[in-house]
Image (cartoon, rainbow, N blue to C red; front, side, top):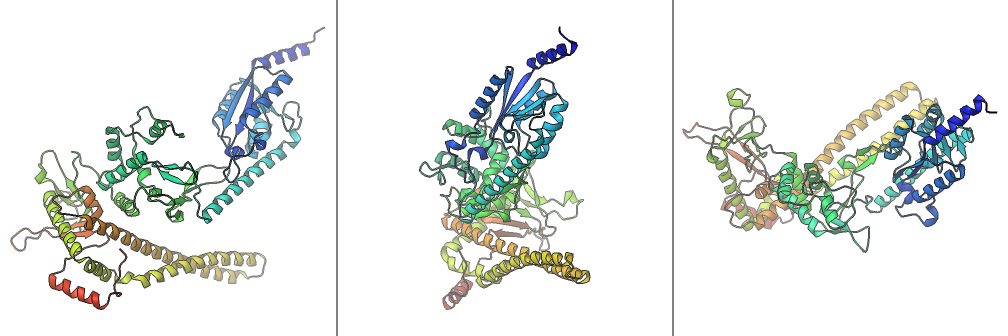
Amino acid sequence: MTTANNIKVQNDINFDEELITALYCRLSVEDIKDENGKKKSKEDESNSISNQKQILLDYCAKHGYKNTMFFVDDGISGTSFDRSDFNRMQKMVEEGKICRIIVKDLSRFGREQVEAGRLTQIVYPSLGVTFISIQENVNSTTGEGMEMLPFYNIFNEWYAAQTSKKIRAVWQSKADHGERISATVPFGYMKSPDNSKQWIIDEPAAEIVRKIFDLCLAGKGPSQIARQLEAEKVLVPSAYYESVDRKTRNTPPANPYAWCSSAVVGILENRQYTGCAVNFKSTTVSYKVHKIIHNAVEDYQIIPNMQEPIISEDVWLRVQELRKNRRRPTATGRTSLFSGLVFCPDCGAKLHFAAAKSITRNQEHFRCSNYKSGRGTCTIHYIRDVVLEKIVLEAISDLADFVKCHEPVFLYMLAKKNNAMRQQEFKRLERFVENGTRRIAELDKLFENAFERNVLGKLEDDRYERMVLSYEKEQKELIAEVAESQRILEKAEQQVVDLRLLLRTLREMTDVKELTPTLVNSLIERIEVHNNDKSSGHCYVKVDIYFTAAGMIDIPTEEETLAMMAEIRENPQEFRFVA
């Protein structure tokens, strides 16, 4: 005789059989590689996806679960539950399509104890979903193993935390020994077939990198460069990798020539093209929160001479300087060689380049952006672009001729000009930065020591407060002074690099008949156009040209040159400038 209860149980079983038994598999990078980044041996591959699938299928066959579906997250950390196939499974659970979830072991489900406990102990039971972990013998419906579930989850999270610490320690050790810690190879390089740690130049890609830097030196912005590369049908990096059968994480776009400005910016800002390695550019919040945090530039570790350079250090630094003064194109699309370089000496604003359809090339001009047709806060500071071009061309030609004939005198002039930053001053500032940084760290320890003594009652509150105020004042002043000293040192080092570029460009110059964007961007740092002076009855406009690393240079007369050469012969070591 069949009772009502027996009928209900039979109906539940039939209903469950119509629903899906979800078989969840997960494998993280840490399960594939050890903390040194090497692939684990066969004995350590018990967590492989294929192994998990087989164990789950065998379990289902033994217990008669037929309507099964796999959900797989391969290469995904278990410290976060934001995983694509896991989310798909969760959505189906909420829609009532899944009756049970089976995993090989709890670590495959996740290594974050709070969310793992919430799902397995509250969410799934309330939705009528059975959770089964084979290895720990956990079954949420029968209650088997559930009393130990929180402890398993705690241990799994602890294991993830320890693994994260080990990996970070290995990265730090590698960096301390002058090794590169990032496995990502930038576009333009490839790993050497003989040594995976060594990068070699991938010449076809490197040519594109050099072209991008040349275009930037020629005055083009990232968007303009991207449009030109697309027009010239230059393959984007992912499409290029596909064309040479090289693996890449990124899927090539539908248009293989569709360069985006962000890709161009990434290349222009990548210092590794100068032959160095750059460590610690970014980090994550924690082993649980994988959000990437970009470190400050001063926190980067730069290791020189790690691979053959594609771009010289001088060119890379000059490009970074140029990108600080971004140039806005006019409505007509016409630009000047000097856009972004011309300033007003009175108010400090940039001079606006005017190029309307209604005016000719000879009428294109600069005027102060604060002039505003006479209604602004500054005077016009007007100069025609063609006139400025002639002035700058003449100034560059004169300087190039002078350097070719009297380079020692030119360096002597710069040394006198920068006398305050001679070698002795460099060393003094470097010592101050080193000692100041050490003292700041010492003050942090003194803070901690004073706090502990105060908490333990070994230091009176009044005394503690006076000590803290004194420490805080000293540390605050030191931090500001060290930062300013570092800024001065960086500026001086940048001037030396810029000077090398300036000299090399001037040495290579022949008879220049016309200015080019590359020439202007390599040599000119700033141009100041004064307001016109009509006091003499003629319109006279003074133009100050500041050369890269050299500033304003007044070419000396022949008599002045001979006098300086005599001074150099008398005191050859007095004025030295690295060039």
